[in-house]
Amino acid sequence: MKELLNLKAIFSNDLMIVVGLIFGLLIFASTSFFVVGKIKPNTNLTELKSRTKSWWVMATVFIAATLLNTKISYLALAFLSFMAFRELYSLLDLRTSDRRAIFWALLAIPAQYYLAYIGWYGAFIILIPVAMFLIIPMRLVLKGDTNGIIKSMATLQWSLMLTVFSISHLAYLISLPQIKGFAVGGRGLLLFIVFLTEMNDILQFTWGKLFGKHKVIPKVSPNKTWEGLIGGIICTTIAGYFLAFITPLTNIEAAVVSFIVAISGFIGDVVMSAVKRDIGVKDTGSAIPGHGGILDRIDSLAYTAPVFFHLVYFLEY
Image (cartoon, rainbow, N blue to C red; front, side, top):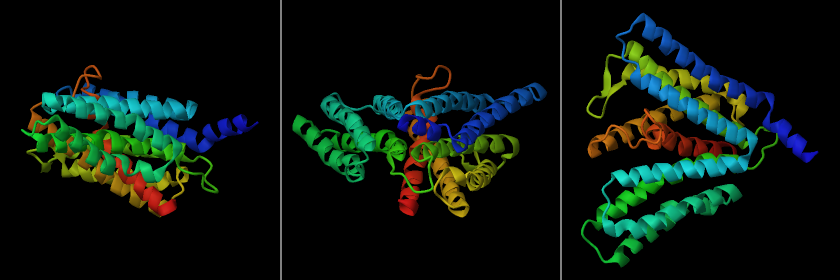
């Protein structure tokens, strides 16, 4: 009986509405780009199509893992962090002597996601920012190679923060305690932030392509325009307001949180653009054939996930 009740909660009308909206947005985007491509063949929609196709894959994985089995969700997100971390450190020209420290950094991934799984907030919130901040430098020092050690310390810690600590907040959403009157729980919060990030990501590019004239940071990301940024923020904020029912937030709180999430997604995108320009690569990897690496596709989520989590945690938990 308990399992049947759990299934009923999982496949509630509220969750199904969000699932429908996620796929509806993707269908609308894919159809729109196809039509625009036929009407205006010279329009460059490569980046838009690439991002949309990537979101098809990610949205399907997130939804399947979230609705069918929460344990799969933790494992899938941990694997996502592992792939993203591996992509990043392989690009950052670390020293041969850093291999042992990299091994210790990799051990932090299952530990971080286990803490998210059991819902131990105190340990979850300090493992990487505090414990690994102390452990990694000590492991590097023990190797005895001081040439370039500061760069290695900073690089490994920042890589862990971006790809593991940030993304693991998605897993912890599922472990948040039940709130009276909010039956959907963490699954709803996870789908809410995935949908908002997806929507913001696609619509900022779409608005930019359709109306963009004024560049935001041309030296870092020449495709980013003020028109795209503002259009994406407005649409995301409005969507958050009307999707408040999938969260324990009021409509106004959901709108404010969505506004901040939209800005955070933009920041995550341009930060990774700056990193790739510094390294001199177009993509962080080739894990998704034709669409770059894992980190190319989750750069926005790496920023929106912790921002959303802590705003909701502060307001409701």
